[in-house]
Every structure is written in structure tokens, then in C-alpha cells.
Image 1 (tube, rainbow, N blue to C red):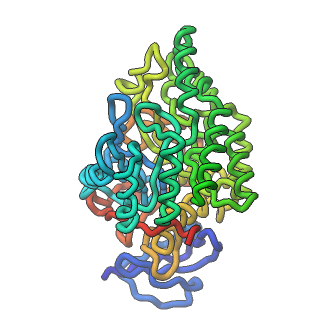
Image 2 (cartoon, rainbow, N blue to C red):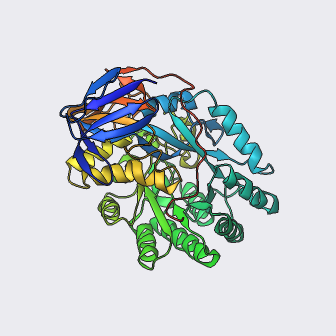
Image 3 (cartoon, rainbow, N blue to C red):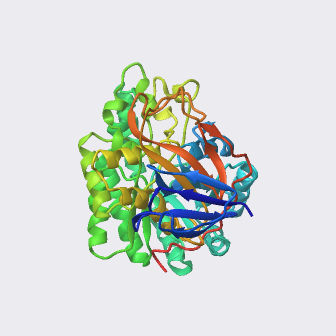
Length: 463
């Protein structure tokens, strides 16, 4: 087994910051020690003097190769996980999709076929339930037992992913009995469809209207509703990609009542706004995602929610579509623009910039990007921390390096960056995945197929 020691760095986890040397044996961390106090022998030494030594990021919300609106997300599992590694993320949890009329197992098998042997980093799956019935409800138990412990439902996208309140309640009741976690895309899709139809009838077809019809109040209403359904079912609920202050208020209220309600937001809601959706010459199409970008004043509320722990996780909802040929499908009709943004490569850097800007602390950075997503989805101890026994998913991070985010230099398979030209302080220098170097010296040294599938336990916040 190869032994690697990392010396001289500041080790940052969600729990502590400590100057320590780290010893890795094979794929695991085996020891931490005060600098220079151990005379370890190792085949490889990484000097991290002046750098941070942090756990690899855990991005709990990605959509590689996802079908949407007649096209597919432009990142494959190979290209998307390679880009994730460049950005210091060493674990993704992607969404397998049940097709209407088929079972959960068929959807899961299809995603295993897409990802198997392709990923540069480790990966797990959530399960999207688009056809909640007696058969699929029974299948949930088996999936939980084999490590698919979370299930996503939608109050949006009628005719595609939409589940009605009765279906949502049944799925939540099942989750209450098998220790699964229901994840909810919370927007009132039926009402939004009416507003889309009315906007298009008025000739309002530009990308900015995507944000105007998907109203914050309809995100808040759906968030309130799924929380109450979860309360009736006696089940926990995790609300994905929270973008609006009003929706966050519903989550905060429930949490202050002691309910097992959890919330996630994404970098696009923290750093972008409806100003981007309104960019001229159809450029706003680049920023069409759902939930949509909000006016800038919502950003302060989301940052506050991250500081107060009313929001616990920052994921990307990485679902890239090229501007040329894909986003352009919606020219003349914003409702036909594929929904999704690229971001799996940018999350760790953007959140470090938030540390620099004073929004969050260094430990909170690691907590929301590494430790909590690992705990939320049954991977903590193996992922999300640097401690004896943990997988050696370790990032050497230079907090003083400066970079400019650009499509010209990113590694995601998409022809634009949502953060083009943004100056960032901090850069990933070296990335280890299970003890193997995948990024070093400005080069990708990993390989497709290194990443292994991760069966997950139930949420460690519920056990």
C-alpha cells in the first residue's frame, strides 16, 4: 500500500482547524499528528505549507446526462466527474430517474449503466420518483436496503415529474417506515403553468419572464405544503435548491418548531440574480434554471440562513446545457429553454470566496460543502472529514491564489460559464481521491473508472 504524508498544512474540518501532518495509507487516512512530531516513512510527501488541507467536497445534487425538454445535460458522468475533481469535489450524488410506467429498478439500472466505469470520483444515487403507485412504493424498501436512501419528488413540471399531494403523502409515509429521506422540488407547478401560458399570450417570451412567472410566493406555498404533508406523515423532508426568502422562512419556522425539515441552496442563488436573466440578446437563457434566480435582495436572506443553520447544505444542481444548440431551443418561447446551470467545478471556490467576503467562516465552508451533505445522505465518517478511518479524499487548497472563472479554462462540457469573468481568491492545488492523486500541478492525473459507487446508509441526522 502506498503511504502518503501531507505536511505543514492547516487542516480544516467542520469541527476544528489545526496545524497537523496527515498520514494516508492506501485509500484511507490513518493518522494526524502535530507538525514534525512523527517520523513517518512514506513513499510520497506533499508539502502543504501555507495551504489548507480540507476534505474533498461532497456535491449532493447533480444531473449528469439528464434528459430534459428533448435534449440531454451536456456533461457525461466522465466529463462531469472530471470537472468536479478539478474543483475539489471528490463525491457526487446524482439522480437516477424513474420513467413513467416503469419501475424504480429500471431507472436505477439505467443510471448504473451510464455511470459504471466512467466516473473519475466516487458517486452515489438518489432516486427520482415520477410515478408514485403501489408498485413503486413497495420498491422503495428494497432500494433503501441496498443504499439508495433518498427519493426526490416534484410539485412542479406537470406531465413530466409532477406528483400530487396524495402521492407525496404516500411516499412520505413509506419513508417514515423505512428511514428514507424525501427530497422535494417545491414550486406550485400547476399555478406556474397558468402564468406561463398567460405570459406567452401577452408576447412575453424573453428569458427574464422565466423568473417572473415562477414566483417566489409559489415556491413558498409549495414549501409550506410539503412541510405540512411531511408533518402529517411523521417523516423528515429535505427541500432542494431553496432560492427565495419566503421559502426559507417556511423552513426556518418548521425547524424552530423542532421538525426534521432540511434545506439546501446553490451557488447560483447566492451569487447570481434576475439581473442575469434579464441580460440582452437572449444571453439571459444561460441562467434559466428552476427554482429560478431571484432579485438580489434574496441573497442576504440565504446567507443568513446558512449562518443560522436554517439552510444546511450548498449543492450545485449541476445540469448544464450548451448555449448554442440547447439553450437556443427556447428562442421566442422561454418555456422551451432547458432548465439548468453548470457549476460542479465552481462550488468549492465560490464558497471560499464567501469566506473571504465574510459571509461564512472557514469551518462553516467545510460544513456546508463537505461534512453536512455527507451526514445528510449517509456517507459521513467515510466522506466529508479528515480523520483516521476516513477515505483519503483530501484537497490541498491555496487560499491566496487568485483566478478568474471562465469557460475558456473550465473543464465542464459546456460552452459558457455562469460566472464568466468573476475574480476569485483561492484555488485547488492538489486533489486526492481515496489516496490516489487526481489533480496535481495543473494536470488531471486521474482516470475514468477510478470512481466507485457508494451505497449509502440512511440520513445520519435521523438515526
